[in-house]
Image 1 (cartoon, rainbow, N blue to C red):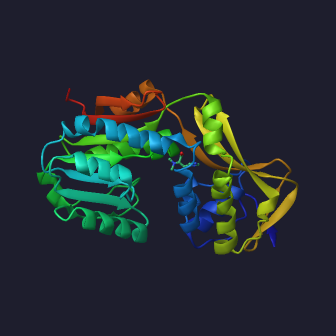
Image 2: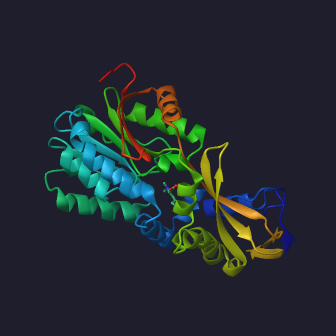
Image 3: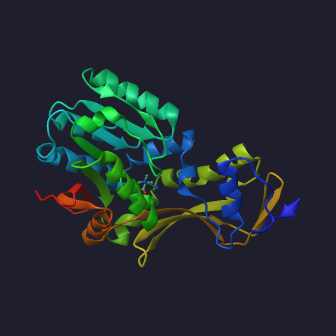
Length: 322
Ligand code: AVI
């Protein structure tokens, strides 16, 4: 057995294992948030979206309902909707229902089973639509079906998932999606706005403990998939508002000094030491406008709810105006 440090990692065999061993042997322990979403994590996230404290999902859905016809009015008839994420949610239906005879639906997701099941549901609900799912990590370059280049294209990235990305990831994603959607494309982006910590903290640390279970589930996943022995009762979920970075951070705090074994590696925790598991960034209108502009998109329309909690923006090519 070895006590792990950044330079003594055994050769590992999967991206998950690489990330876990790398992240837990850093001085400030951290895990990439994408590993929160195994089957159980995805179920728990679905449950989070219906919590009374978690305003983003219902607020964005309300904005899309209210603004669907305005959005549809700037997308030509017979368009392709390209959704980044598995889709088939209420939000997808709102946009598809509002568009004028949409022709193609291209959902993109890394999780093949989830994607294909979601695509099937859309195919059943919209028999006239040509559904062409792409199994891919949309943070990398995705090749879109050639046939959609002949029709108007609308990219769709709802859910404020953009807030889970770093500046560099956002820039790369927005620039790549612009290049692959092609000239004249439109893009519909949902992101969360800055607001008081009194609203944000309960949204990420709810009374029923669903977000805590979602966060702690990553330790259960490490136990199961990497032969580890995390005692989940010796960690607690913490949500912190980081004002200077404008983000909610999720952490798992060690409730005492302890050593955890992951495969053949031992990892030590001091009491109070945390594993940083997720950033959820909250943007000002200006910050997001700047990021979109830097990636070659112009802001055509901006929509929000009456409490200005959440934003949906419609982007176009930088040489367009509405
Ligand atoms: C998926 N993502 C947009 C969620 C968020 O709000 O950042 C993930 C989440 N984490 C805790 N609650 C929800």
